Length: 141
Image 1 (cartoon, helix red, strand yellow):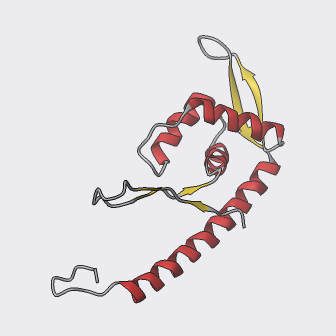
Image 2 (image 1 turned 90 degrees about the vertical axis):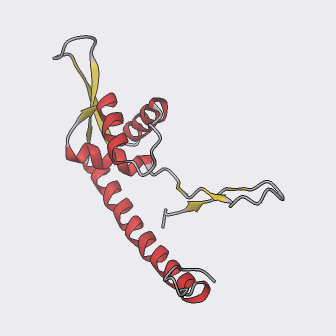
């Protein structure tokens, strides 16, 4: 499965702060772009705006990363683009998903489904092993 979680632990020794765990799904921008393009063909900046609406983290998307991913997807035959000169201003590329891209998106959906099930099993086991309800109903050992 292409589902992988990365984590980073930032904790200065002795400062008493909680560690920051940063879970990331590698290359998750790819399926998000494919999904948005299945919904409707779009220009790059429209995709960036739409990504910012559905993205799981509050940070704005890096336009460079979005365009690099679009070029990579196009080289891989998963999206295609054409110049759109119909609007005002300079020509813009209009991206749309290909049948290969739809297959790739389905594979991502299957991998995400598997990952969710694995994470749920992990959480259930963690809660059963490490957490118990206090008198206040709060979880904690």
